[in-house]
Length: 252
Image 1 (cartoon, rainbow, N blue to C red):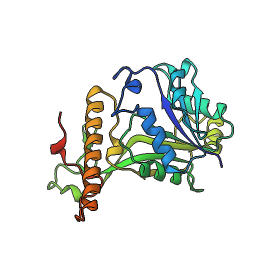
Image 2 (image 1 turned 60 degrees about the vertical axis):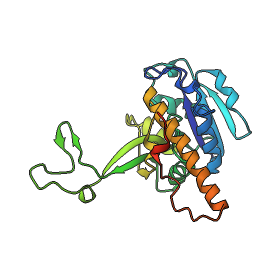
Image 3 (image 1 turned 90 degrees about the horizontal axis):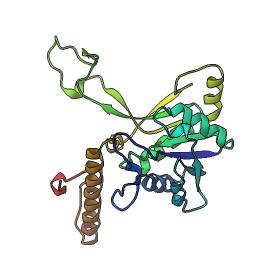
């Protein structure tokens, strides 16, 4: 099976103009996604697709390719299913594709690997990254997982809510094309697997504030990692886990 990671990169962005061209701690968002996909070691190819050929410059090895989007797919009216239709048509060798969102720069290599591995399970047709939340939630002003007329429950006792985070989602060609040919209008045909990813993976960059916050968190994580390595080098038992953050070191 030809397993491919696709990184969609639009040149235009209404909420945060030119976000895919901005430097995120010395790299672009697409570069970060590319490097993590390659490091996962589970893909035959990593394809960057964009309407701007400048992103061809991100091809840094034989495993990375560029796919030029049409003008139609570069506009605000372009939908995810339109891009997937185009991708399967242009890359006939692809049997499964994992959409890796460049605007989720804090997702880990392990997050991507878990989603891709789950997609390649023979009993799975599509996948979506999620975060499980133990919080009191409402939908359309109605309680979703609690009863306001009863004693207020502890969050750990609530029925959890699963939130789509869009950092990764994927499809198998055979199921996707079969359902589409039968008139299926949804995005996730067949048996869908929900894959739990890190909370940080759920932080998507949509606005300038998101960009700043995510970049500062990454800087902090890098500092924590350096402290850990230095502690180990000096024989100190460093117990803080990799995802813990000392927010006191973040300067806004």
